[in-house]
Length: 116
Image (spheres, rainbow, N blue to C red):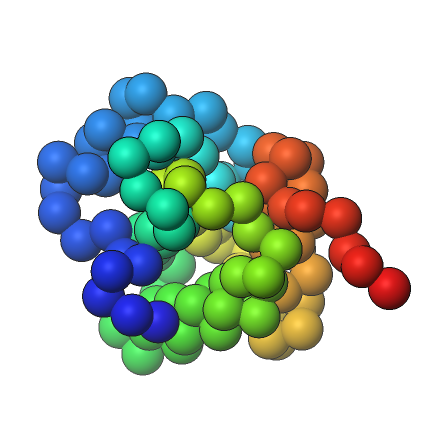
């Protein structure tokens, strides 16, 4: 994922937390903030140290990034997304992570309809 699509600064994270809306399921919490000044979406990831060691946390982040990359055609542009992983994610495989992330994004009305 390109650097332009990432949220890295603490101020940006705090802005999304304070001004954005949150949607959650058992595996993820997603904060969404509309940004009219940008044409593409940005994504920030947060995986707590309570979930596992660094290897497990990085593994989870790779899964989330890849799932988001595959869903990027359907994700609403011009928004910031902060995705917080919860404990159950640590034992999930990639397909389950993608399915769960897709579910929580649908709850937040952040996905466009699939075109068949």
